[in-house]
Length: 90
Image (cartoon, rainbow, N blue to C red; front, side, top):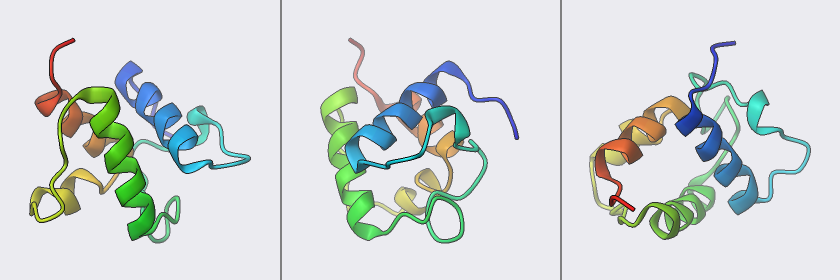
């Protein structure tokens, strides 16, 4: 399994906390595995909850009608990269 970057580790922990994923450790999430379907098995409700958590933590909105979402939410690595591009500086 590929190694997670610091940003990916932080995002994996946010994902676990915001979605109440019991029995999943942040380090166990493959940064290149799909988040939806066969990967972590997330669904559209999970996507909404995760988008809200990201908004609160990183200070920007993930718009539901954005065509970037499918690509951004593909993997932990893709989502971390998307956040790095769009987050509001603290």
